[in-house]
Amino acid sequence: MSPLRQPPSGGPHPTAQQLPLDLADELDDIRGVQTGLSRRFLVANGGGFVVMAVLAATAGNLLGARVLGRLPLGMLLCLLQLILLVLTTWLYDRASCLRVSPRTDRVRDWPAVTGKPPSSASYGPVPSFRTGQGREW
Image (cartoon, helix red, strand yellow):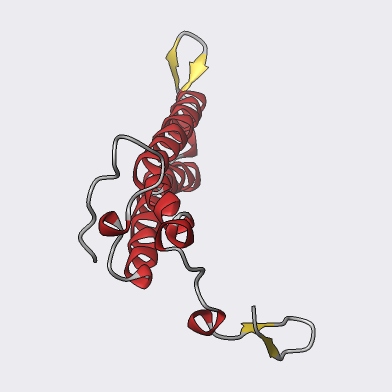
C-alpha cells in the first residue's frame, strides 16, 4: 500500500506531490478497503440469517413462544434482523463515503493533476464480450 498524504484544504484537486507514486497501488488500496467493508457487511447480516435459519429448522417451537404479550420470539428476532440490516447498510454506506470516495476522487483526478491522461497501453487490451477479442481503449 502506498502512503497517502492529506488533500490540500484550498481546493478540490490534490497536487502531484500529494498523489501516490503508483496509480496501481491506489487502485489496490481501493479494492482492499471495499473488500473489507463487504466482508464485514456479509458476516453481520449473513450470521444473523444463519442463526435464524438454524433456529427455525431445529427449534421451531421455540420461535413460536410468546415473549412480549402476543409477539412470538420468531417475529421479534426477524424485527431485530431487519434493524441489523438497516443499521449495517447505513454503516456500510457511511464507511464507504469516508474511506473509498476520497481515494476514488484521487484516482479520478489523476490525469488532471499530472497533466497527462493514463496511456491505453497501461491498461492493456479490453476484452470484448461479443467477439472474444481484445480492443484498445
